[in-house]
Each structure stands twice: as structure tokens, then as C-alpha cells.
Length: 360
Image (cartoon, rainbow, N blue to C red; front, side, top):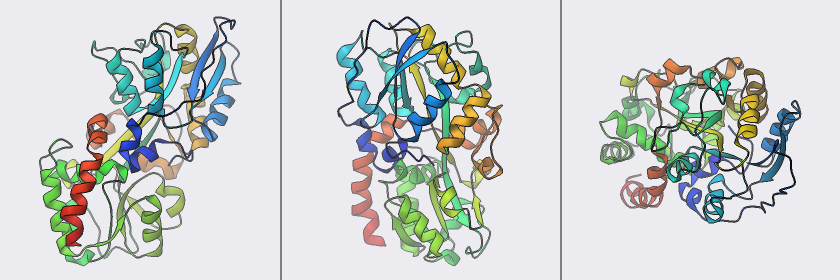
């Protein structure tokens, strides 16, 4: 879904990269700045372009933007090395990096008093530190789920066990564990009583699937999936919203809001901000609150092809399968332990190569 090449999608394809140590662009802070000036980190490309447009609509807070030269997780060792004076007030990140900030205790607690627009954001998106304080200000969400091309599927697919139906011989494009953080298999585990920490049910399922002959292609990235589905080689796969602009000319059914008993689970990850302690917290909160009001959150996400977090923001009709209110999040969404998932990336891929590939 995200257009920016340095994005969460990179992690979802290769989770190991999210914990790598790299170099962040120089964080030079001019201490002569007034108290209403903050230093904020951001991704490049259309991300920085669009957030600067939002910032230009207000004059209360001036922002010294510092761009990532790699994934958001690469800022963490820089903060740790300079703590308690990191020279950063507002840190852009996603689940993995924000959870790390929560564990370290670096973030200012976020309250509705400090960020009134937080009241319009689903509570399921809020990350808490060890003391129970909310530490993140969400701004964008993306969902990852199963979908199928209705004009190429031999029957209506309504439950995960349908993947084993012989009528789907060669029709499944199954992502390798290196893609999507292997959430496709986490979903199989959930269906059979496991989860990301108990993946044996998933391995049993995927081996059965491999033996069935229903996997027509193993995808190593989103392009593999989109090409296979668009060509008609296969008809069903698992991907994030990035499939939408590529496959919008086809009749696609997104299995995002399925009864949990069906086994089709939707996964969600988010992007947002943390306000670090010791800096210009009040000004950082003020800008973040402005940026996530319904209008601004809608505009920003529309222009980066993201989904707004503010429940009052509007979405186009084609985005509706990927938009969840608070009740729908509780019913349909599963948010994994991203840190644990990232640590399993290499082991899962190795096991796939040793135990599943020979069956294909």
C-alpha cells in the first residue's frame, strides 16, 4: 500500500532487516531554536512531502525535519547512544520501533488532554509501556489479508480450509515466509489453535497444502503475487493493500472482514509518532494533534495511499474493505508480537526450505 520505498513493507518482506543497525542521517539540532521549534524524524519520498504540506497549514510549531536514511528501527541505537539528550522530539515509526521505545521508557505518556484527537482513534492501536502509559500517536494503518480473483476462482472461497479443495489445484499463490513476515502462516496457526509462538499447526497445514498440489506459485515478493494473480496463473493469495492499485481492474474479493471461525484473519500494522522525553514535548504533542485531526489525517493518508486512523476521516469506496472501526478491529484484527516475529524470520525461512519446498 505504501508508495515510499523505505517503508514497513521492506520489513514485512524481510523481517530481519528491521533490527539491523545502520546509519541515520545527521541529527544536528540548533539549540538557538525557540521553544516552539521541534526536531522530528520522517521517511523520505512522498511521506516527507505530504507531512510538510500538513505542517505548512499551521504556524504554532516550527519543525526541523530529519530524514531516515534507512528503516525506522535504525534510529533506535542512535537514541540509545545519546540518551537522555537525543536531540529529537517527535519520532516517526511503526509497531516494531514504537514497541522498542516503549520498552526502553523513552516516550512521554500520551493522554487525551495532551492530544485531544486521540479520542477519535481506535484504542486497539494504542501501545503502552511497562507502567501502562500510552506512548504512541497513530496516524496510518495498513491491513494484510487473503484475497481472491472472483472471475478465476472455481467456487466461492469462504473458509481457510477451502485452500485444500482439489478444485484449487495449482491456483494458490502462497508467499514464502520471507514475505509479509510470514503472517500467512501465523493465520494458519491461529486457525488450528496456535499463534506466532506456536507455529506447529501452521507447519502441518502448509505441508498438507504443498502435498495437495494446490500451490501453483511460491511468491517471494509482492510483484510475484500481483503478476500471478493479474495473469490468471493463480487466483488467491495473501498480501497487503499494495495489491489494490495493481489489481483494481479485476474483480477481487478481499477476505478482510470474515467470521473468525472461517480462519481468514486480517493482520494490521500501523505508523505513528512517539514524543521523546526531555525535549519540547508540549510543542510536539500540539503538532501531532493537529496532524491527526480528521481532515489532515484523511489528506495525508490519501496522498500516501494509506488508511487514516481517525474514525471521522473519510475513505474512498475501494478502500472500505481495509477500513475498520473499533468494534471491527476487536472482531477481525490480529496484531502479532512484532518483535518476536522479527526474531523468527531466518528460522522460519530455513524450515520452509527444508521441510516444505521438497513437497512442492
